[in-house]
Length: 306
Length: 292
Image 1 (tube, chains in turn brown, cyan):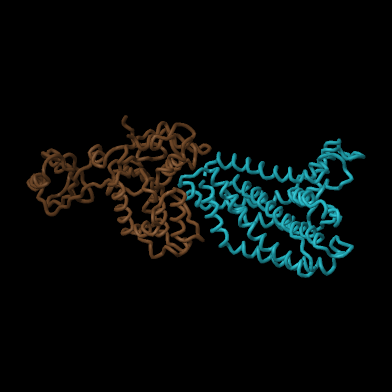
Image 2: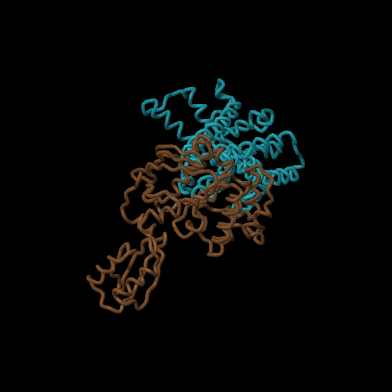
């Protein structure tokens, strides 16, 4: 069954098109990463899912309910960590969670939830005095109230230190193991890469890619890249000979080194072959990261494949 | 029933605000001072025959008629606009509730806050007054306190509804103060201005009938009329007339010299009902339809 379905979703603010004809389907049980640079339209899309804002065109269906006309049904089964939210400064952390428990009409133990996000020791302090990371943990605790079927997390690691971000990922995984669908946005590839089943990349309001992490890697000419320092003078003739070697997908001269993308053979075989051509002095291997990929997708005009 | 949860949370939040306690303090102080002044020199405050408990009540109406609108503005102007400006509304509306429930909860919560502040001030003021006077009219006092709390709730509705129409607190402030200036400070002038324009830029020799309900439209006038309507005997004995209420309240149309339904004090109750329903409808319409 589908957890989230967007069809032709469009949102304009005056002349600005924040979300442009978005089609996206997220299956139940997935951890889905919604990736894009700041201002790409991620938060606008999430705000439509939660009925904070209304689409100009198209529909958003969440857990089988229309996000606009049946928002209450959607939010009854959804835990939300919004973006650019603010806590109630004068209420304590515990009061926040108690409020969420009462609003959702469940019997969760606020103490246990605060324990889970590791701010139980600050439970009775006013949230106005919390650090950004603690507020983020508090909002997560509120989102987890009532064991939601869907978690919508907008930039969940904002304000968290690396440790906190890891704990956040652990909680996301644990919730997913329980069967919860997780939809979260981020502008940092690394976080998405570590945890997501599938990823959508959005830029300037438009989807530029939807795929699994591996799929994204394969779909783009990434793979492993060798940087090789050679004894001989590097020139076009050497380069041409290297390009002709078996297993070399591409080669170029980069900062006085050979930059060689390796195809379907072992790196060792390629290195050995280069050694015979130009005499290898030193080398390094770089696995091209999804970060590069993300930068490429969102900086260059990319044709979207159907 | 999430509105009740929202109301409770809102009350909990708002009672911790320093502004509220400053307000309660000011009201208690003003209440004590004015009560003392009334009992000492009643002839200056509309009771030439001497201080009575009824006279004190009607004198206090003049005070609360001014204080309640101002207190409502302080307590309520940020109720929704502030949450939208800061973004806490996102935390609230992420939960399984609706905008209608949130608006209702906000109105109830802020009305309770206002009732709390007013209740304390009135009990202290009237208690002090009855001690000085040596008399106490329980029915009149209870009627007065209940109507005043209802008036507070209606004003909370008006200001929360105004706050619901915008996502900017400065705009909410402007609109709230604008409402106060137009409907409370200038309302004895505004209907006359309308009349002047309608009659072709001149005043007729006799006032047309429609002018009386229009003049009654100011919430505090309606509040005064309602008290007169519910305590007619007391109003007669103290000769309570709008002109004598002084302190900023200008009520029109309660003068018994005019004929017809619109001139009877009961119209105040209708007007108060109007102020409960209409702002809420406008506030809801604007709030439910807006992008946060």
